[in-house]
Length: 405
Image (cartoon, rainbow, N blue to C red; front, side, top):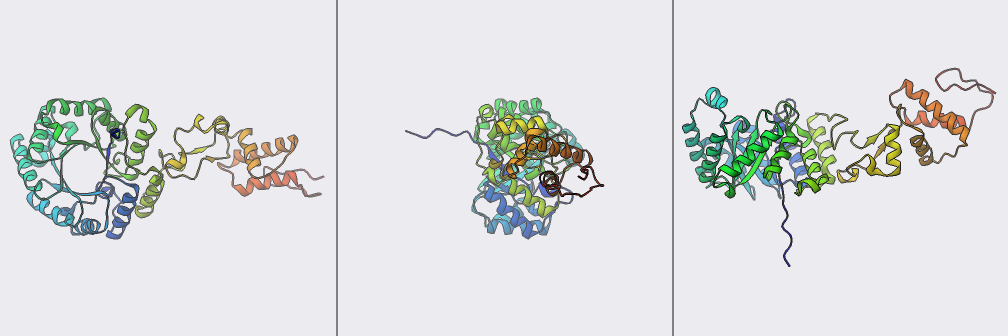
């Protein structure tokens, strides 16, 4: 009996290329190698190592990664120019499986003001560049830069010509983060309907987060039939960043019932990958960042804490261990209730009478009115003072002062 066919989304990680273009995120060769090893451990399908023609340093980094990293396909970015394509091939020569990622802008605004090319010149450039690349690389990916703002009929024409010229992956970038989910999904559906040779290539998307919609747009594209998503760890990248790898992957995993697709990502490595990138670049992750933020599995509100103590699924849709967290954090703070405080006492092996519990709980609440998050030693001091009061001592300072005997 044959194994069931798995509908799979390819994860193309561009942390080392588009991600590194974030202001303040540049990495040296050793740092890029270290991060590439983390990405291989995470089991991304494709690592975009850099942009070899952009600088000698980037060329050296791509070359070093191609010589050291095994497992994922290794890609590098290239303009649709002969010298760029040849230099990219030289940098990736040692890779066991290499991919050229060739881009050319297609939108009217880019054609007019940046390229100063008409539609016919764009088509001719695509044909020439991809014809060269298909003889040098294992895989050829073509990106229609600013595809989300390109006229639909012209985008379909460019995609057709790119496939005819040798592209095996067609990437549709929302380069400036302009698209919204319904529109972006329609772009993918239009290409699948209008481009007669579309079945000869994998459809990919690359979404930017200028309107905070990069993950949503990528998910809409998957619904419409795209099967590769370009993304970055922690969502870093140009301007407001890229589609966040960890958010996309966990959305697909958590809502497998809806999307029905899988990735090959080893999700317990997500927090590790996020923290390593933070350490290397110095770009911190907000506490409330989805999936990998410090608060992603932390609960302070009393109602939530009570629910969590009854059953984790009341307020957590993912298991912390599935992304590499040690467990849920029950934060004792201003909004915590009696259930959470009682649980903390139980965990710390304190046995209280009802009156002692009430006294300790009210003392805890007074402290929370003065501090955002009480320290563990302060909580221990509260309960110790109540369970083992020092005789004949008058405490005159602080919110937990107790009257002497």
